[in-house]
Amino acid sequence: MLKLILKKTNNAKDDILSGLTVALALVPEAVAFAFVADIPPIIGLYGAFMVGLITSIFGGRPGMISGATGALAVVMVHLVKEGRELSPDIEFAGLQYLFATLILMGIIQMSAGFLKLGKFVRLIPHPVMMGFVNGLAIVIFTSQLGMFKIGGEYIDGGPLYMMLGLVALTMAIMFFLPKLTKKVPAGLVAILTVSAIVIFGGIETETVLSFVQSKATDGQAASIEGGLPSFSIPNIALNWETLSFIFPYALILAAIGLIESLMTLQLIDELTETRGNSNRECIAQGAANVVNGFFGGMGGCAMIGQSIININSGGRGRLSGIVASLVLLSFILFLSPYIEMIPIAALVGVMFMVVIGTFAWSSFRILHKIPLADAFVLVAVSSLTVIFDLAIAVAAGVVISALVFSWQNAVRIRARKHIESDGTKVYEIWGPLFFGSVQAFNQKFDIQGDPEKVTIDFIESRVSDHSGMEAIENLADKYLKEGKQLRLRHLSPDCINLLTKGNPKFEEIIERDIDDPRYYVVIDAKAPLKAQ
Image 1 (cartoon, helix red, strand yellow):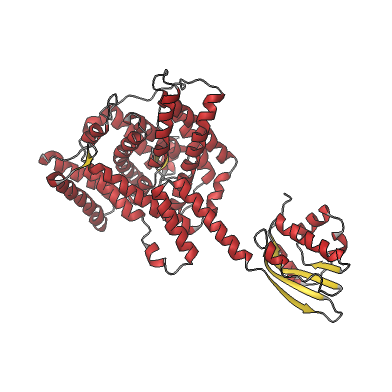
Image 2 (image 1 turned 135 degrees about the vertical axis):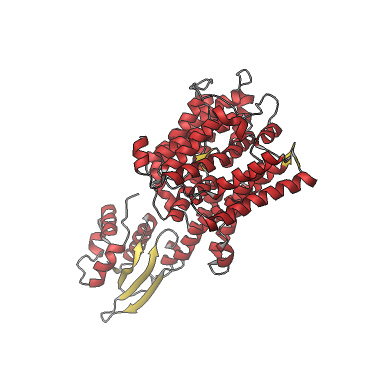
């Protein structure tokens, strides 16, 4: 496996250095999200290691980094709390329910991959994607503000100015170093430089150790040191009551994890101008979360911040994610005293640069140039990502976009009318006929006032769904009841087959032998209809 990965890695040096940078940035993120979920920090670190390693090897997007995320943590905290209350007699009941939920979550995600549902991420409109990126950038920024707190209170005075100065120095190194050389990751150089200044200069400021200690509560370890994760089956009763409790949480976590992962995959595709495999990513994410459930990790999904750090640092292959995960494990096993010395300011500075690189600043420039509906969707998704969570924001954005699209197409349907030499009235339909345009379609016809012979021509129309077919069938019934001769012209073969299959009378009113070259051009563009 290692030989295969190295063979497919174009630049191992960049991947290794980038992986080291990502590993350093993963530590405070995993610890912080573990505290958000109200679980020990080592659980978050285990989760970041296992999810990151498995998805890097087997996932559908080389260069994408996965780990413990805040989007999942805010759901997990309620699961852990309710699990404790549900089984107070079980030791660490909240964690046991979390692990069982991760197993079910992973099975759901793997099922989505096997059913090839990952392709539906392509249906997410661009304004939703921009809103997702902007909202997530704001969430990453606000999550870093918590690093400026000690004991729940923001620092002030000298400690605040010192930390801000170190953050600014980190950002300056990351901004100017790439202009001089791109042979080493700017983020790694910035972290090492600022750490050296703090350690050898004896500067008093927040470090990884002090951050963990300030967040730890009674009974929680105030260190990132630990051993290898070990296999265990969640210690809860496997019955209907347990399943009914964990299934809603598993479904929500699976949805959030897949949405964030697949949208991050799409973003990395755009940045690298390559194409990932969304279904393979679903399977890998699911397998990683199943492993987390059995080996005591927090679980997780793709991380947009760390993924962008990796890409910007030159990490494009699977090796970068593998290195990041293995280095993170080495931090847990051997190097925790050294990692705990790293100043939080250096890691915050790196994440602030990620925020600047992630936010779609062009959205301000184009807001007044794009359709009002698209601008509304962009702002709404950004806001909902910050206020609620990613799943709600993306779902709302897709629904709004779909409604706008349906309305715009519903009002586009037209009917041009003319009378032929033999007295036949011809309705030439233009525009899509589907559930949204059925009402407007029906209003185009004057059934009682029309002459004895009527032809409806669909050469410039497309019957898109079952509602459109029902509208044609109902309209035909009304004309026939009035004793009028109706002809339907230029329907697609699929539509003809479904109409005649449902009602043999259409054999008499549908024109099949049409000598019109336009028909054979348009017919190929018409979407195939399926019986519902």
